Length: 468
Image: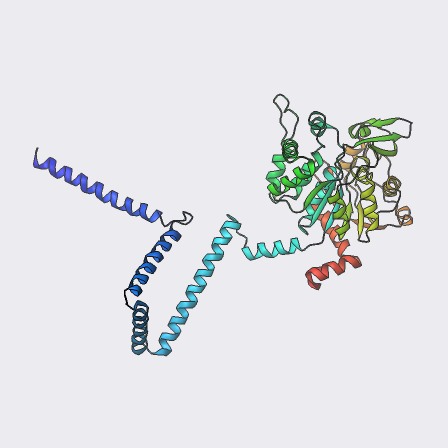
């Protein structure tokens, strides 16, 4: 074996040793990484060793505590004798304050990283917003369809104490199929409300609204409907399924079905026909003169009644008059609970008439239909949109026999309602007209804060500055 080969082998071994040493050091330092729950037990072990040695010393007749304290005293005397007190005192105090600030800032930083990872918003701002939302007024919203979810999307920025009471009379589309195949209450409207109240609304809405386009038995179903159906099967009924889903999705507020009964709508039309089934009423294309349900007088969900009794503010609509709003009022206990409260109550009227339900209806006609369905006056004011849609939108809707709901102000006033008129519409590039969730919630909350009870409630919670 040559000398050169031996030198080459030694060089290789030295290089490997150099590479291995930093690697081993890094591996040891990894044991100090946060989250491994190793450091705390190591410190406890060290403390155990110290205490054991201290106990042994005391048992042997030594006085270790005395000598340690004496050593500390001598050290402090040496420092004070060497460095004047007017220098050493401030230095020690500043050092202590720096350690305190450093420790507290790292603590808050760690908490912030856990609670709001990847978010630039300050933790104190998050806590203040959370406090404001969860001290907000208790709002009950009654309805169904896309109109209700639009309203909830706006209201959740003002209060987290929201209860959405939703109709369960839907029998069409994915909800209808699940109702027939599994015997569950239709989850469609509840799904929309849960998505609207969730913090991660955009992603959750896309997920819950996703419809399968293929698959034996899956085609046409939305993921949200299947999710709620599965949760209902697991928990035992729709109420518990929705409550469990609300926790999973971390929504602001709660969503409740109006009843747990298997309700099916029927309508008597002006031409004498009797139509059964929510999805068939609109398709029948007649004028509804009477609306009912089978079974008649279904029992209300107790949680819904409690929410109405505890409410600071009650809102009805927007949504299809005969298939989203009024079906909730066919539950007698809900109607009685609303009538018994003295809190501010408002009805949000639709912007456009709906073919098959409200052709030619004015605002007063909408109010009259609600009053006749429940047999009494339930709300104090009606919110109507004040600005006409564009010509493009009017032409588009006219082709479907749909027109803007006309405000017959005198008739509405005679019904004993106050008119709240505001621009709450959003129109897209295709001429499709919808309520704007931000404007709608702002106007509704402004009206509530202007009522005597609303003003007192907000002043009590947030003070004069918030009310103004």
